Image 1 (cartoon, rainbow, N blue to C red):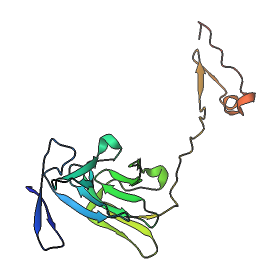
Image 2 (image 1 turned 90 degrees about the vertical axis):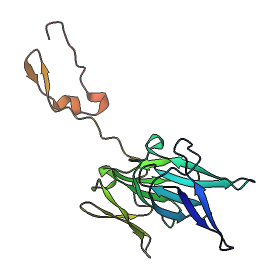
Image 3 (image 1 turned 120 degrees about the horizontal axis):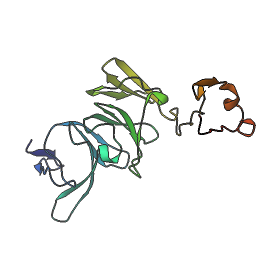
Image 4 (image 1 turned 180 degrees about the horizontal axis):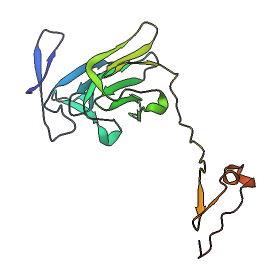
Length: 193
């Protein structure tokens, strides 16, 4: 709760202080996982303050962090673990689902049932990357297995389907309204309808 301890190369322990009101500092609370990405940047997942990336250390030795949370697109600020796949994409499990993060742009993409994610709550620290590149997350009702590059990048919009039309208390056949866009009849309403 008082900060993050860092053991430098010279064997010196440094305490990185916390500050709840400054988004560029480590918030107080529980750090659930640490990850050093392929660019050598340190990422911290926290139990209540989202995901942090160590961006720089200034001349005075002060550490500057960038924080991602619900406002930036994460499903929840309770981040249980952060992992990186073979392509460099970050994966996070939260108390309310999964997300991927582009480490270069910090773009967050929440994953849902449309992406094949059927578990809504995940456990702290329950994650791994396999030798085959699969990203695993342990959750409330099982394990989610994600294969890098195989999740849906863009969601297709489902077509609108008319299932029932009622005008003026009488049912009108719905099938003509599901025809190809050029063959759809106009729907005309009168004051009596």
